[in-house]
Amino acid sequence: MKRNAVKMMTSLMTAGLMVSGVAVVPTEAAPQSPVELSGEMDALRPTLQQEQQGVKITNHTIEKKIPEASIKVDYPQISGLKHKSVQKKINKLLKEKAETFVANALKEAKAGQPTTPSGNPYEYVGVYKVTYNRDGVLSLYQDLYSYTGGAHGITVREGMTFRLDTGKLLTLDELLRANSNYRSIVDLAIAKKLQETDGYFGNFKTIGPNPSYFVQDDGVTIFFQLYDYLPYVFGFPEFHFPFAQLLPPGTNPFDFKTH
Image (tube, rainbow, N blue to C red; front, side, top):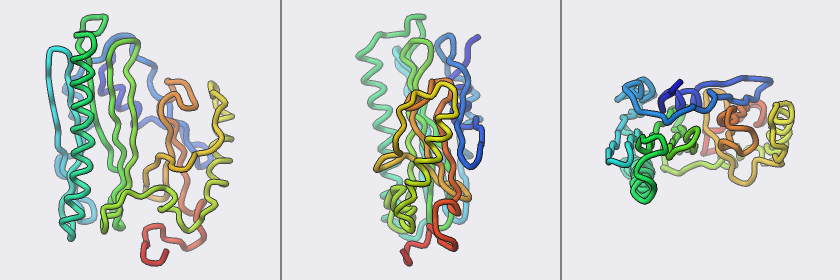
């Protein structure tokens, strides 16, 4: 049965299994035939104007159709910041990421086969989800999906967490600066959960120097790419850690004046 890009992206973004503070996120099985765009994409897009704690997020879309491919990418733009130079800096980065994906998709589609083996054009879809928008911080992740033939397409995820006073992209080390040894907690918990998961490839050692993450209400979610440590069917492995588990009691990770 055919499955479209929306269903694939929705399953990758929303399915999850929480166990003891960490999560491994499964997704649907790979589609058996090329995916197609449909009006259901509207259900996945953010509300056109989403206002949270005074920072307004407006959805923008780049859409291209050529004989070889269909391309549709959503990206956010913010407004309402006191410092307009910071607002411009963040918006420029978010827009450039979307434009780069579109440019690379056009280049790949024109250089590759004009259609997939079944006769359908290539397909490229970009969506995002805002996971935190208050306390002077904006956190989101962006999923960029490409289908160029085969059993299924591939999605790449990028997490971005901005300081809204400076526009700086925060690394996880910077966010959890009150505990320089947080990796000892995180690495052990992730390794344990992966070892308990059927299909684990067995190659996890550490989250590394610059792990991918996004902020949620009570903590951070660290994630890995498809195929990094688990088969495709598991989607993006996600591991959620409450701030209370990683930081000293009473620590506010968003108070950048005291740390």
